[in-house]
Amino acid sequence: MRQIALYGKGGIGKSTTSANLSAAWAEKGLDLLQIGCDPKHDSTRMLMNGRVIPTVLDVIREKQKDISVSDIVFTGYRGVRCVEAGGPEPGIGCAGRGIIATFQLLEKLGALKGDLIVYDVLGDVVCGGFAMPMREGYAEEIYLVTSGELMSLYAANNIAKAIARLSANKRSSVRLGGVIGNGKNIVDEEDLVSEFAESIGSRMITFIPRSPTVQQAELNKKTVVEYAPESSQAEVYRRSADIILQNTTFHIPTPLSMDDLESLAYRYLKE
Amino acid sequence: MILNHSHTDISRNEGCTLTGVLSVTCFLQDAVTVIHGPTGCTHHNASLLHASLAENDCFDIPLLVSSNVSEEEVIFGGEGALMQAIRSAESYNPSLICVVSTCIAETIGDDTAAVCRESRGVPVVHIPGSGFLGGGFSDGIQNALMSLMDLSSPDLHSTEEGVMIVGEKNLEYEAEENYAEVARLLSLLDIDSGLRFVRRMPAGDCSRISSARYAILRDPSLDPIGSALSSRFGTEIISGFPLGLEGSLRFLRQAGDMAGIDALPAIRDEEGMQDDLVATFSDLAGISVSINTSMADPGVLQVARTVMDSLGMVEEDPGIPLPLPFDPPVGTTGVRRMLQSWRRGISRA
Image (cartoon, rainbow over all chains, first blue to last red; front, side, top):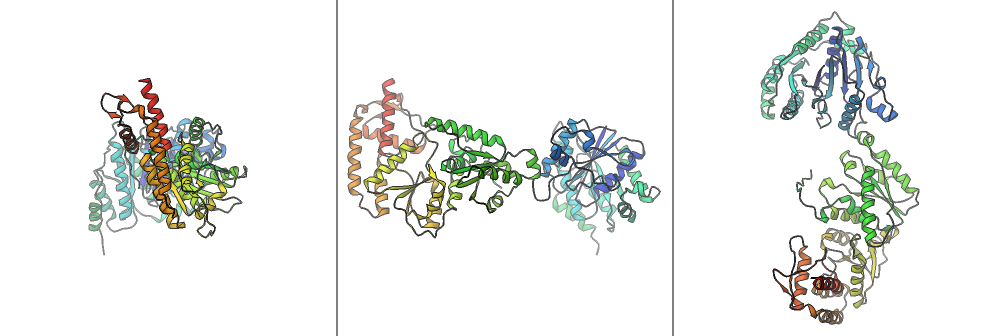
């Protein structure tokens, strides 16, 4: 069983990327479990054809006990099993603790199984709870999703810091699998993301260009892989899925200083 | 961010902030205290208070209500649980509800103060009680007194006749004896002691705090409370109970000056009483004694050595070890109790 986690700045396209990669892997016949680790609980919506599934935390709250796998794991496109951790309303409670409680329940129920588990994790707020998917026994491969925007690179760099710190623990086997570029139509964006990846001691494993097909698919409540299976964008996701599947190169990242990160972004700044 | 990295300070004053708060609120009559946190915080403190009070022959368990914060409240917020706990507290028909926030409530960011501000039939006061923010037992006492002070208005025009006693150490063994000694010294000046803020005080009396012209703090660590009383209500402050023989005479002078009374006759009376005391214990003169200074309060050491000098006791090593009180003896009577304890120790040696 491989466990991978996608981290990145909020709104950068982690959920879209995760869902499409899961769909592509499922097409290959792999047994997939995708876990959305964001209080917004919208990671798996496209895999569920727009259905908002009950979150683990809501179920815990309502049922308290006698919770079964069927209460929290829902089957979507091509058998992909979908889970949403959920969390408190914005501005109250502790979402990080919610992630920890979700993982504890999934473990207790024996739900963490399959050929591949994909964790889709909010990357802006890396408190201890949101670092949970990187801890021992969970994801060993981390992929940073970023565009060429400075704040997106900044978030990715911060997550690289968390990976580097956790890697220092002898018992931890978490490593950076690579950087996934998610295009925002910025000039020379692919080069910028690629250089960023190399600067932190990794590589850009794939670049997903911006495409209107993504929005069309989402408006039709489907992944691109399901909505437009013959499209070039679906092919990008399938190719990316293959590359990640075949990836055997993992690194402990060396995050950039803020000055170095800004200098890098500045060099690509176009009038 | 509060940074307090000491892992070794286990002195009583650095104990749990929550316990410090409860050592005040549990001595308000007609009040219920709600502890906004896990049940363990309430259970542990109820046990501790029960044990401490039982030593003073008080066997009532203080009325505490827990908001019973569990993992669900940590994740989703605990304000709902707090509201429920306050409703539960209301069912006891108290005159006042004190809500103490614990570490966990502060960590998850519950707006405890806002919940307390909601309009109800009974006043609800919020008292911060989380120790991880850097405070200890003493800070808890101060937090409680400061919050309870808000229940009084500076507009009160009536003036209390007596002197308000502030911040008595309710869990100390000799709390009543110490109060009685202060009251005795004040009586030498024909001054009455008034409100005991807070010891066995009706919760409704919190509104009268502003009307006290004079106040005596239990000890100088409560100076911030004294400053607040002065600036908000114009209260004149004596910054601590009288400690030892010289401290008692000094206290009489201070209290006399504060109240505009000639203290000389009272000081003469007290000096006479102290002379009698020294004569009563003259059998201790010339005895070789030693004191363990390692854990002793500096104030205790100062009073003890002054008394030893007065009696002609000889401090040397080896000498008969003398038992020292935890807190400096209050007044002449406190010194008498210390001397009785010394005499018992010496007679057993």
